[in-house]
Every structure is written in C-alpha cells, then in structure tokens.
Image (cartoon, rainbow, N blue to C red; front, top):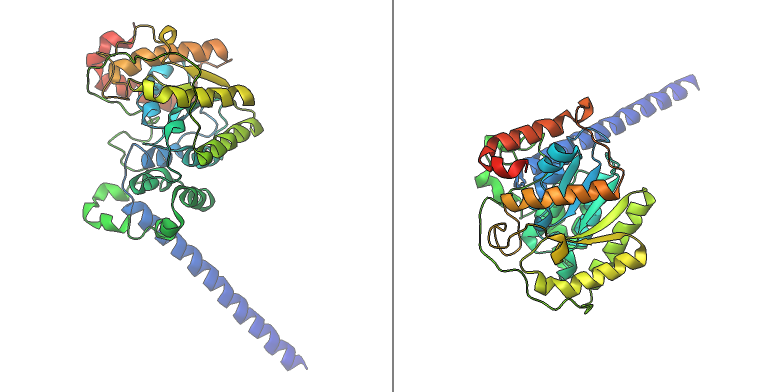
Length: 355
C-alpha cells in the first residue's frame, strides 16, 4: 500500500514538473515571438511609435490626451502647451485613424494614465469605409501591447478575409526583413531620433498656399458611417465611465468645405451626448491663422501654424477646465526636457515661439 502511494506521489510530481516546464516554455515562446514581432514592426512615428512611446510616460502624468488623425498630431504642439501653459499633453494619434482604432487606443491608454481632458479629432467622421486601409491597420494596431486591445482593434479594422493575416503579422510585417537595422532592436523604438521624452507631436516643416474655405455656414448634415458612429458612442461612454471631460475638436483645415456637413453631424451627436465641440474652422476661432502661410498641405498645419494654433488651444483649455500647471514638478521633467529639445532644434522659429 505504501509503495503504491509513493508511486502515485512520484507520478504526480513528474506530471506537475511537466506542466510547469510546458507553461515556462509557452511563456518564453510568447516573449520571444512578441519581441521578434516588435523588431520586425516598422517604427513609424505617425502611428505605431506614438503608442509604443506612450508606455514610457510616467504613470498618471498625462492631463490632456489628444486622440485622432494626422490633423491632430500635426496641429497640437505639445511643446507649446507645456512651455506656455504648463499643460502636460500627449498626442496619441495616427494617420487616418478611424474611431474604432481610436477607441482601442483609448482603452489601452487608460491602463497607465487618467487624463482630465480628452481632445477627440472630428476628422474620422468623414471616413466612409467600414474597414481601414491595409497600411493603416499596421499603423494603428501594431503598437498596442495588450493582446486583447490589439486583437480587438485588428478585428474591427479589417475585413474578415484579412483578419487572420494581420493577427499573426504574416505576410505584412514579415516582408520587412530587408529594412531592419540595429535600431529596430532598441526599446523604446527609435522614432525618428525623438527619444522617450517625445510627446507625440509631429511637425510638418513645409508650406503650401491655400485660400480660406468658401462655404455657406449652414446646418446641413451628412450621415456618419454606422461603424464610425457606434465607436464614437463607445469613446464617449468610456470617457464618462472614467470621469474624463471629452471635447470633440474640428482642427483647422483648408479642405473644411468638404468636412463641414459631417462635422455638423458629429457636433449634433456631441450636443445629444452632452460633451463639448470646438470647431476651429469657424472664422471667429481662427485669430491670426493665415491660409497662405500656416499650412503644410491641404489638411495639415505646418510648424508656424501649430505654434499659433496651439497657443489659442491652450488658452481655451485653461479657460474651460481647471488645468494644473505642472512646470517645476519632478514627475513632469520629461515634458520640460521634450520642450527644451524641440525648441532648441527649431530655434529658427524663435519669433513665433513666445509671441
């Protein structure tokens, strides 16, 4: 009898050891695979790296979270918000990000930060397709660390026939072998030599000449694509659940005549849900902005434009919300470092900096 018990205990120990080794092997395999995918993933600052770099921000230091498209990350100059107002802002944005991708960015963002205000780009309201372009799927999903949010965003972003290939990253990022450099192995990623202090703002250092949009300022509306509307509602609900003030923002845009009826729709939804809408395309909101000098192209502010616009945006944030001035506090040293680095590099913009 004792011999049988001993043999049973021995078998149990062997079996337990086997399961432990299997679990350890699985965890190591997941870590190795995850790191391999990280190395292979393109390190674009206009999508992937804004999310990757977000994880390196000190916990609970972001007071204003900017979510949206390239019109947002080229328009909201986080360095100006810090230097002039002491506002700790982060541009968590990507090129052509629809509201479903923004929703999953927000879910991921709230794991480490609890912002007081979210500035939500109105631009995705014009997107008519129910899925993202393939190149944009990579930009808006592959920087997300959490498998749940990453897979959720991929599933929302892709047609069912393409979903599996994006979930495993094949062939999309596996085609990137020839482009890998030593810097792809670094953590945090080399995001255009910006470093971990970077707060997501991407400057457009160019100038193109436009005229102010000519349109009839009416209440004509064009319907949002159903999926965009659904995820806009989800973003609102998430913000409310976390006690965050949500502001829908129409960023300055020379192509606004096309956007106007869609923005009317989103503004009506904002009024229905009870959150604010700031449209900086309205003439009374664009003090000093010159369409012949302050845009890089048909929808993005250039550096001078972002300097001018962000000063007005910061003043409005301070006016509407009880926003603390974080300057001089050690937990926010990275914002000071980021602003110092940026203004030192763009010192030829000195005149626009502190006017």
